[in-house]
Image 1: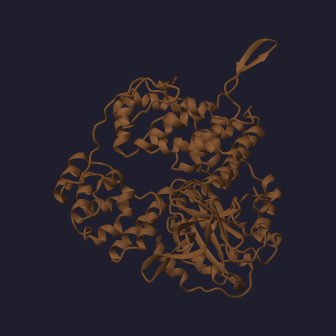
Image 2: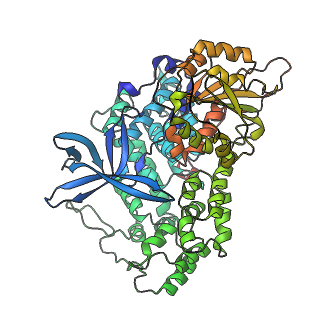
Image 3: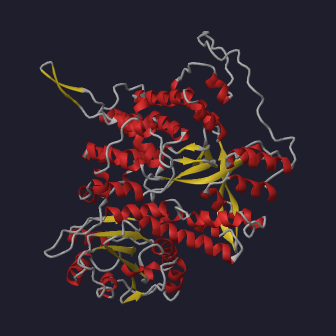
Length: 633
């Protein structure tokens, strides 16, 4: 990893396991997999040293392939993609503008830089406390964190605690912990909403086979071959997973019905799985050919049934088939004949058949609106139910693409409710102070801060949330409701200008003292320029609030260290919150939940009621280590 993206050495020394978890789960928001073609460019401002952008290429008149960066922009109420030519694509994936290499073109798939970054984060925690890392993996399995699950499962399969006997003078004293079994369990346990999909299982293998990951495993002593990646436990677990589904045909049929047949096929190829009968191949519609060495013995003479097609069906017949077969949404779209498209009747039939999950319903809001289905039952009721059960802030992004005020309000409220539900438990016995820099150096950035806080603040408990803005004078911001619209209204009165005095932002909130059973969390928004950290720390000590941690969102182009220096003086952790978090609808609630959960619980003072909040490290440590299911042995 480039030196300019390493954490400051002094800050690293002050971070314990819980804080490092937060750095891993909340300071980074890129995706492990990009499902669209794109380009990668060098960017020292990111944690991984590069930045991904969606891209495409087209053949020019001279036969070269011109590469275009695709940027999504908003004009009025409409979004459109703007293409900017950046260079010419070479056979090796390099994109050149003249003689200069400006980017690397990537096909859809694994984003290696993200995998390596996250794997290193896990490795740092493992080196501090291997037992904690195993409990963290077990805890993450229960969370909606697909990328982190994938990386942690890969790491647990590779690390060195493998249940080996500990011998003294030829006598087996005991067996070492088998944390690799935790990785197997993450792959094999079935539980709706938590178990790993076939695609994730395939990704685990891809991660472990990355040369950079293999190098880390070699450096840690996890692998004993410089040539062969550490994938033995991975292959063993995948073969168990495949065998269990072969022995339970209905499970295999369910995977095929959901459109995952080719992924399962690739999974079997990746580990050299040998089924016991040809029924496995039949279920996947996987035609077999004899190998050159003649080793294959089954599936060579089997006859596959013709693949079902809707090509000759009328719209009415397609609707009848949807209601009868109840296919998943992705399978349904793939079955539609070319030229038919998503008609009003077909979409209505899909809703009636239950083909769409809650996330599908929310994402299809613009389509429902265009087809006039948002006021038609049962679509309208099903859509509102999906919005009420929203688990992330994607509905806020979707709201930009709808025309009706009513639909927009429902979607934005769904995002607020999702945030509130996610952090309701972790904000118990916690009072939160948002302190926002509106000095002249924040010109332009104040709008970014407001946009982010609209997504951030709406879900917090209003009676325990206090907000101030400051330059050389502080002003308390009063929210009239715990909704994003109230945040927008409150901040409409403030513009950037003036000097910077962080202590002023604290001063105007001093009258909001935590209750005896509450801890305080300060979240600063600014560029850290202004008074020195010791001055701020001294003022906070005199304020009588005694925060147990800082969160810091950096905006603007200037760089300082006021907040982080103050945290060092006070001896409390300071968690970085990246702006990019708020562009990812899945990351917002997860970041807030983990940030707040990691905030330390204050020491109980005399006559102080016991704080009920449970820190993230406590949650992780009390999570039982995952065990392989009984059928997996």
